Amino acid sequence: MKKNAFYIIAAFIVFAALARLLPHAYNFTPIGAIALFGAAYFGSKKWAFLVPIIALWISDLLLNNFVYSAFYEGFALFTSGFLYIYGAFALIVVLGIYLFDKVTIPRVLGGAIGGSLIFFIVSNFGVWLTSPMYPLTIEGLLMCYTAAIPFFHNTLGGTVIYSAVLFGGYEYLKYKSPSLVSVEA
Image 1: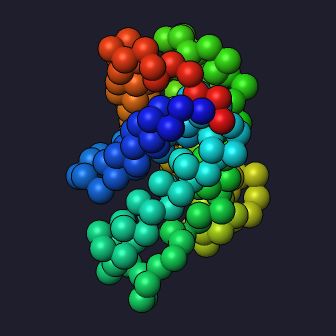
Image 2: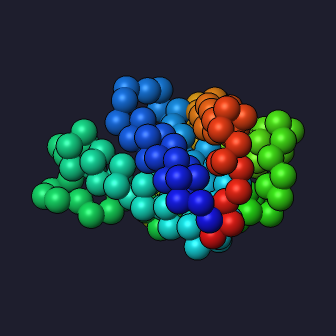
């Protein structure tokens, strides 16, 4: 793997993760796009998982301990519901690994839609399992998913927009600097 390509891909991911610190609409974040982008461009499955997950975790640390510190007692190492959030994130990476043998606009759009659906299904399943707001019945699960529908358009919009920025930005850099094309580690 060319080191400069690795570092540029990692920098794209880190900057996108830090964009979560900027004011934004609920759920309009780069989470799904980061997972897809890492899966598409890191030649190694190890890096496709590690770099995006570490970037997500670091942004969570900053958010939980500075932006949302009033909601936590003391230092928060993990965000509430992190198992479901990170589980959904890992599934989106898997989707990206199988989807991106070649990066194309339809695949990026399909990945953004699929990733948003994965995140919606898994994270809200976690809310249903862990929140006292919903009974642990099929009706409670349906109530949880129904209550989450108004937030889905922001998840989808954030994933589509950030995917366009990440994939488009990196493809533009590859066009301007062909030495970035080969990433095999």
